[in-house]
Image 1 (cartoon, rainbow, N blue to C red):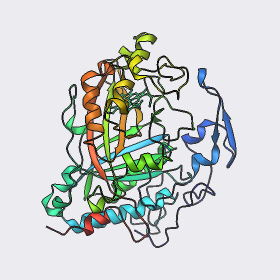
Image 2: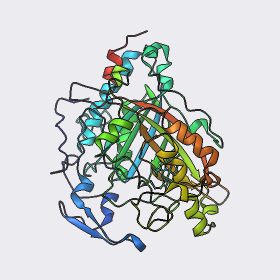
Image 3: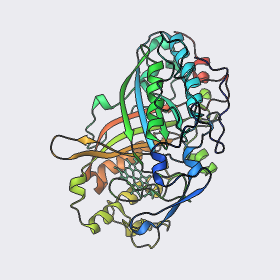
Image 4: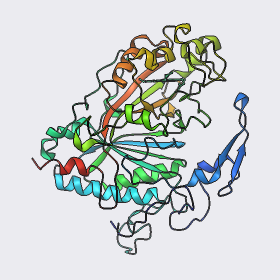
Length: 429
Ligand code: HEM
């Protein structure tokens, strides 16, 4: 792995591309005629009105280095490739070297550069360092975020047991769960988000390639439409039920909200995790064929919001404050609201998925729910417990995959690597 030559990613402007910017390819640009740096007005359907997309933003690079990992508070990109890995090696030094190699590769891909020596590796007899399918594509706001699962801390050979955070608990079984073990858990996870699916897939594929023989992919998930916004001033995206999702979320610019509800501080502990977070991922299958036969009134009452505007029931505008008592007691928004959950909040960053059909003539579609929080015991667990028991939406859903990970702090520079604070605070068993 060559890392000496890794340049600092240049955020927002002058987007470098993989080797040379051959053209503005990729799905991010299907939005309109792209002119670097210019705004593109895009017509939208129905009541949502036209919106302006900044063409440069769809291709720019997101800074990789920082106190927190990118991909949490970062404005949500359009596409996701999420992968959970099982660690195959039993050698702590091999795992540490892999984390270092992964960090350098993620740093380069985020900047729009090829991995290592690139696709043209100069040695014809050896496989190239980079698989090549992202050549010519801009950075596409790629972020690559790593998490460590509870099972990693239980592997005695890695000597991490005493460093396992108290808050890294396994999620309990919730009423209605129908979890598939093959789509759940994992020792490690990588979340790759980008405005171009090819860039996100390239990132996961190349990390898996680097990890060959040391880790193996346990499960992975593609997401095609963000279902949450962390940018309140932007247009709120819609989920597969056709409702705006992410209206009330923690914004990436809400420093106080992030400090209170998302980032683990030095006082929260453990010390190695300061600046980190916890990630819950749930594959939630939607019975969309049944949903599509429910009346508009029923859909809106269940959600607690109107379908087109996204306003709380009884109010006019999307961002009007909901009056909880006037919503149906079993409505999603009323039950998920912080006032119904001792103030619990989380940063939701999920994506829609459609993975073919289920063999019974129905789409295998739904929401790949991702939420970041300071402590799952005060956020996802109590909120999901309430939803699983009382939410009318549950009639149309089934949770089929589940995982929880602790997300280490950000990589601060080129001598730092993913998980350094954890491994340096522990010793080989
Ligand atoms: C497929 C499943 C789900 C769908 C379709 C869905 C849909 C929605 C929609 C349309 C909203 C209103 C817009 C907004 O404020 O963002 C919303 C809000 C919310 N949802 Fe969900 N959701 C799902 C699952 C979950 C799960 C599993 C959780 C957490 C355990 C959750 C937590 C929340 C929270 C915290 C809010 C904001 C409540 C507020 O502050 O008003 N949702 N969801």
